[in-house]
Image (cartoon, rainbow over all chains, first blue to last red; front, top):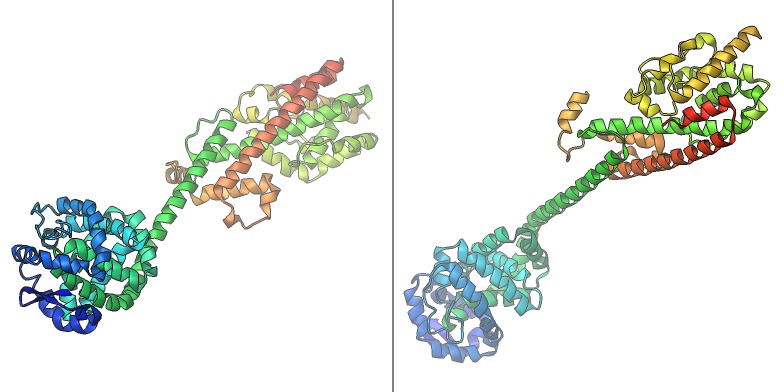
Amino acid sequence: MELLWQNGQVVVQNQRLHNNNNTKKSSSSPTKLLQPPIPPSMDNNQQQQQPSTDQNLFIQEDEMTSWLHYPLRDDDFCSDLLFSAATPTPPCATSQVVTAVRPPVPVPSSSNESRPPVRNFMNFSRLRGDFNNGRGESGPKTIVRESTQVSPSATPSSAAASESVLTRRTDGTDSSAGLNRKGKAVAMTAPAIEITGTSSSVVSKSEIEPEKTNGDERKRKEREATTDETECRSEETKQARGSTTSTKRSRAAEVHNLSERKRRDRINERMKALQELIPRCNKSDKASMLDEAIEYMKSLQLQIQMMSMGCGMMPMMYPGMQQYMPHMAMGMGMNQPLPPPSFMPFPNMLAAQRPLPTQTQMGGSTPQYPVHASDPSRVFVPNQQYDPTSGQPQYPGYMDPYQQFRGLHPTQPPQFQNQATSYPSSSRVSSSKESEDQGNQTTG
Amino acid sequence: MSNRRSRQSSSASRISDDQMIDLVSKLRQFLPEIHERRRSDKVSASKVLQETCNYIRKLHREVDNLSDRLSQLLDSVDEDSPEAVVIRSLLM
């Protein structure tokens, strides 16, 4: 038994319509489909009320039961639809089985496409989840696609009927997309692609339920859905891909933005840590802070080298070696500007005790010195301290090169300007040693 | 150039190309592991910064160790000249 809407009346017919969805729909759908849209609300409601009983019968049909049961659950959602629709039209009494929301929904939805569709679709998504066991998200999308697809391409009969439904769907989807862009819209699009015909059919059916009021409309929608199913399946896939592509891009953009944000946050976090490590860093600018960090690292390396050499020299500080120590240290230090501090020069110093003078001079004459000296001096000391005339490498290293760079010990360097060199702290030792050495060399 | 960089990188969320070049040069200087491991373009700023922080901490530890050693040597050595050296070397 089926209820058919013929000539503005509900006619009970066999299930042939359901069986011959395509054929019957094409033939009977025009009348049915066309009619509902014409009368806005009252007619539909009235008509819906009349066949309520019939609808009940109709509802008992197998095809209806599936979504009939769901509508009961949909009441929660449909209620939202009602409120969102902003059309407080009382649900038709006919919707005894079907949620009362349906009658007013289609009417206001057509008028207020913005709000009701949004909620509708959100509800639909939930409904879809119920209906399709998780494919709910895809539901609205498929629905939208179906609507969009069906309306332009579907047969006029189906298109007419589906348009009314589709418009709501599209509106809902659009609004829902606007509301739930990232999450649901994207999620919906993704599964939507994978939706099969069955899901779409179910979706369409489910959609139809809340929108349509009574069995008549449901019947039409079912038929439409069935027809739409066949039509929409192919169309869905097409449009799914098309809309999916755009949605994919937006999704990718969103993902990219999120990842970019995370990257930025990570970088800022590291910058803060670096700033904490650098002493007396009052720069808020990233670039200047990085420059300071670079200089600080260089100064630290030099400092460590000096200290390590000093540690190594200490036990070697024999009276006879004192004069040679600074030279060797300076030579070694200059020869090994950046490697990690180690006592590699130690054996060299021991072995090279005799050729110290030559070594120092060689070190002094080594072209490396000016190169290396220039860097630290440029970094740490504004005054060039290299004195090639004396043949002794003016070791610009400092035990506290960073402080020197900071200009905290400006007075120290000039104190030992015997060789026109200026060193802070430890450099004094070397300078003093150098002076002694120079004295020795000049004399000896 | 620094002004341009500062203007561009005034906001904390901006890293100009110059800054990236600075980072890469720093890495090459101090972190041989990153130096030739991958192209400079691929080196992420966060990784560079992290390595820099680690390296600075390592240098700090080294300085502390050396300071301790120098102080110990200073105590052990009574001579004036080496002592002066150590004292000055300890000046940090």
